[in-house]
Image (cartoon, rainbow, N blue to C red; front, side, top):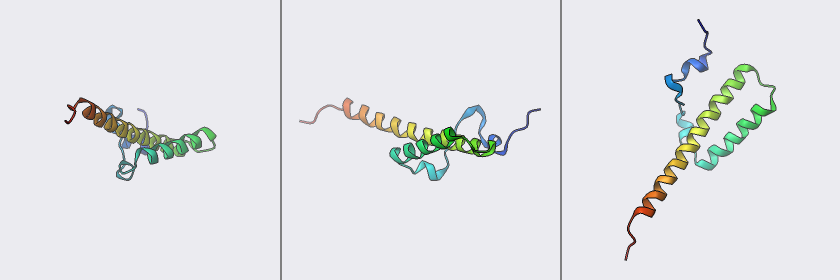
Length: 87
């Protein structure tokens, strides 16, 4: 039997990413900026395995927030361009 870390056990089945409420409130720019910081920290190395896993999971959640913001912007743009012109 494979032992799971507490962080891995907290992930839902199917690989879905859980976005903590405090991250769900971030703008695209805020989430992207923090994601860049997480990536820099991971690339720099020196973190323990548990720290690296925690950073990775935060990065995944931040990437999900960015994708949600982009999807929302795309939907707004699609709606705006599909509406008949006023006049």
